[in-house]
Length: 352
Image 1 (spheres, rainbow, N blue to C red):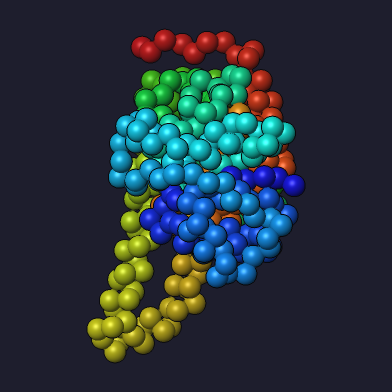
Image 2 (image 1 turned 90 degrees about the vertical axis):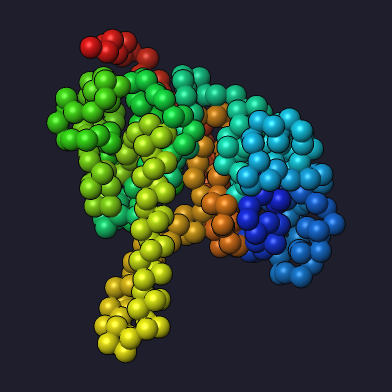
């Protein structure tokens, strides 16, 4: 049974939404969940919800990392808060009485830094990456997920060619575990599909990825290709990825707000929306990030799933399930094996 430590105090609606999600997960998953946070508050919330007592334990901690706090300052000033305590617990490992994976909906920067302070990087990982799923019109993998994995979306702003190669290999490993996609299509995000388009780092990474036989590298894709599902894993630097991710979230929310506005204001629009209702429901389903749970931070020797700050119980439940699956399928070991393919590659050429 995988053991997942959950930062019960991290998130916009913590601890209520976090505890509720953990309670739901305890009823439907063979996972041991260790909720880290205010013991009395967690116990009170659990008592009000159905849950499997044998699948949930409480790990006491004092305080929480504010969602808008400076990550480094907050972690230094609050070492006993739920997030750093949970990260150290995972660093111990389940064999030593800790946990196998971390789930947090807390301050993103603080989650990444807490992992960096508590965990080790997998051998061969030069930079870690925060991955995210974005909706697409195509379905792929054994689970037919309507998502593409995009990385990095914020952990590493400036990258080298070898970092992009590492992201591609880590993303392919994750897609294999979660989407059951044995050979995911991998691409670089650029301003053109030609091999010579993009920054010096993208051009050099393109040349290196072509030399790795065990990865289905399909070349460059443009921004327009992301929602089309042209690739299963799309690689970019953290600055670009974060901008893309926020744009997708904004588009989805704007479409839903416009639909609600139209429905309230004109009868003709109400009739039109009624005709489009099945399509709107499908769009909402495809863009529902809560069904995927959260985004993995890839490259560490321990598993961490970063849930959205606005996560409700359903998202937390799914994040716990994703974390458990990563443990059961030995994601860190798979990433190490994938990165081993890079050892024989020549160094990338210097920028022109």
